[in-house]
Amino acid sequence: MSGHNKWSSIKHKKGAADAKRGKVFTKIIREITVAARTGGGDPGGNPRLRAAILLAKSENMPKDNIERAIKKGTGELEGASYEEITYEGYGPGGVAVLVDCLTDNKNRTVSDVKHLFERHGGSLGAPGCVAYLFAKRGLIIIEKEKVDEEKLLDLALEAGAEDVKEEGEEFNVISGVPEFEAVKKAVDNAGIPYTMAQVTMIPNNTVELEGKKAQQVINLMQGLEDLDDVSNVYSNFDISDEVMEALG
Image 1: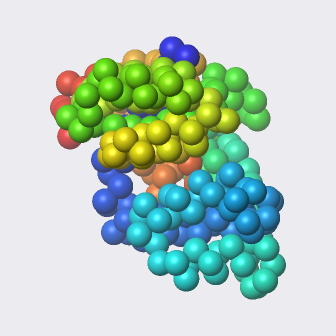
Image 2 (image 1 turned 180 degrees about the horizontal axis):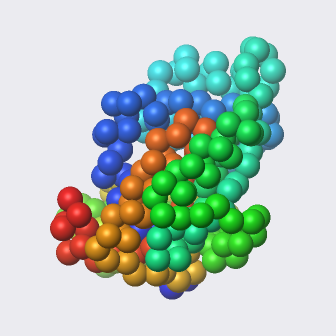
C-alpha cells in the first residue's frame, strides 16, 4: 500500500465548518438508514451499522436521532428510500476521484456531481475508470503530538494493522477491513485520541499537484462533500504541507 488518503487529512480539519452547515448529521443519518436496511437493525451483527453508530456518537448525535434512523432503515418508521451509487471521474492534473452517494433521486444527483466536476476543471467518467486505483482499508488518523511513535507502532501492528505511516503532523494507521475494529479497539483501550477512524478507500499510488491545479482539486472535493447526496469522496492527489499552507 504505497499511497495515502490526503483528502482524509484535509477533510477532518474542515469538519467544524461542515458541522455548522448541518451537513454531518444529514449524511450520517442516511448511512445509518441504509446500513440498517441492507444488514438489519442489530449493530452487533451488522458491522456497517455499528461503524455508522460509532461515527454518529463521535459527532454527538442524539440517541433519538440514531434510533429513528435505524427504524426507518428496518421499515418500522416511514422514510425515504435511498439508493447507493458510486460515480467515478477525473480532476485537474488527471487525478482520480471516487464519489459515493446515497440518494432518493438519481437524476438530481448525477446532474449535481457532473456539474461540479466540469465547474472545477474535471470530468465525469465511465464506471470502473478509476476504482481499480483504490483499495478499501481501515484508517485511523492520530496527531503526532498525542502519541509516542514506537508505542503506536507496537500496539497497532500487534492488533493486526498493516502499516503506520507519517503524514505531515499525523500518523495514519492502516488496516484491512476485517482487522479495523480490532485495531480501533486497541487504540481506544490505550487511551490514544484520534481525529478520524473509519473504513475508507486508500489510493495505491498518488499524483502530486501544485499551484492552481491543487487548489482546483481541493475546491472540487469540498464542493462534492457539500452535496447532501454525497456520503464520501476519495482521490489519489497529493500536495506537500508547504503547498497546503500556501493555499490556506
